[in-house]
View 1 (cartoon, rainbow, N blue to C red):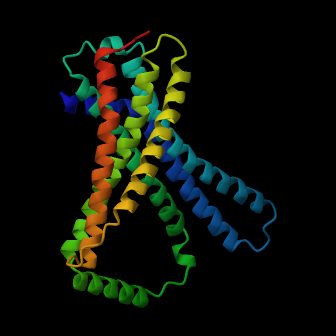
View 2 (view 1 turned 90 degrees about the horizontal axis):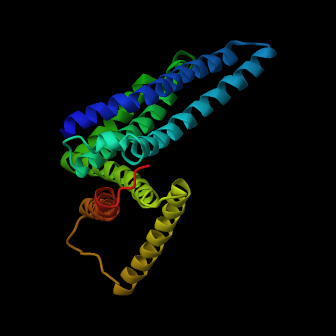
View 3 (view 1 turned 180 degrees about the vertical axis):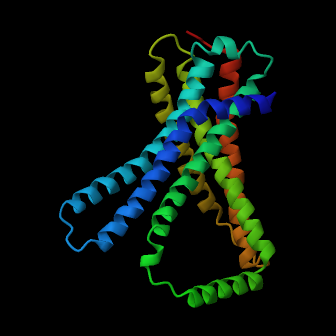
Length: 271
């Protein structure tokens, strides 16, 4: 049933996100063509105004995609589970955990997709002007060959491990960010009045408490004066650091998940 919820969630959120993504990519191509036009034009004149407008729209498109990913994350959770649609959603033969995980997975995927779209947008803008740039392909090939040789010497398994660890860390971080929003909304909407205002207040309260705990934890670790293990190689140290951050984010996400689940299950206050 979780798979069906995720499929339904992608369809619902995709109706909002996909048009923004396509517009952003289209603006990146338009921005690339405008840069190309600026290179070709001898007398800029009115074209400089067009160029400024297009570049402004391109930057606005990038910001809009990022903001919309956050809005979709909040609104899909609020409307589907905390609003009027909650009466229907919670009558389905689905557990509270599956509802939360469906929202969580889809929102995290959209956050990652947004980052990839921003990178692709800059790549498209660059590709539109590739023939205007003098590229020494032999030097580029040599550089990539050197990078590959260094990676082989360093250890491809280490590199693969880094990639998987960073990927997992990014996904868990996105989940933790979503869960903090969900937790604040679950607390705020458990009250009868001023639900949105209380959700915002509790979000900042949670952020302040977490910031205090992090500061206290750093001070505590400094007092321990932990010495690095000499037997661990430099490559191993990077693995330890990445895994430590991953464990920290898993704990953070779990702390945000538990009250969200309990409030949705025992203190659901639908309008």
